[in-house]
Image 1 (cartoon, rainbow, N blue to C red):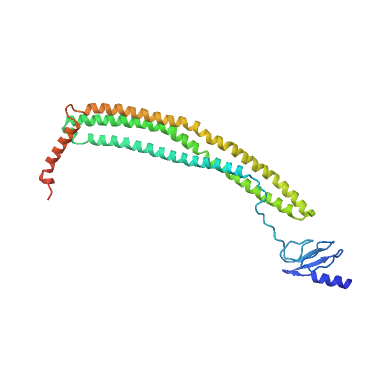
Image 2 (spheres, helix red, strand yellow):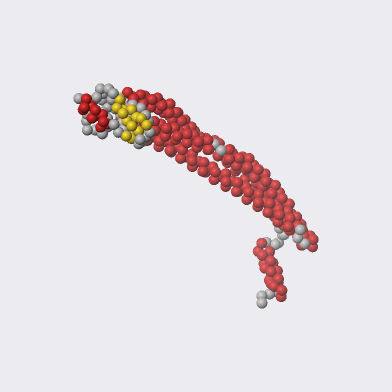
Length: 315
């Protein structure tokens, strides 16, 4: 019996990366043909020296432990209905964010173009006033002066309109758009909580599938304790977003309606004033008995006279 025990022990003594494994005494189990040391009985293996793996009892001489990988849990922790509702509500907010950015950008382009137009009109009238013709023809000077006055009035009303649009439309759009980064961050935190939830749920399921030994039960208990606050955190974040995202989306009507009403009023006031300004200008410039057709004919006749000059004649 002693010779059998010595031979059995010699067969199990191995070297592993420079480390020596020794049998720790106890009651021997019946020998098998397995390449691993028996689990039954009070046998143990102590590792000495260098090598891969952690020293201690109960580890077979296999060169170290390979940690199991945590995959996706088998249990569906978020129902398809909840996930579909979340994706739908968040998708609507993403579209709203894009539309808000586009509208703000277009409104800025529009106001910049309006200002550029009125400033250019004032510049043209000033250039005409400095034209030598105004010194020679009093009637022409009167017309250009009337035009210059009208352009300056137009520019003043245009500036008022742009200021009102900036204050009542563009600034509210900008403030509304500034909310989305916080919303997107809340969604990212919810996603991170979901990943942690799935990882720990898979860990719990992994231990639940293992043989119910003392160490496994201890690790299972620890995994469940780790899972509980993570699950509660995800459920709280998920519920908050599902409750508040529809409310945020529906609030856009009450938020933007005053801005759009102000935009319409600003345009109505501006173009009403433009109608008056250009109506007055038309009365000052129109000459009785000279319809547009007659003026066009007179211009063509004068242009023909200019073309008849030798300095502009074709070779």
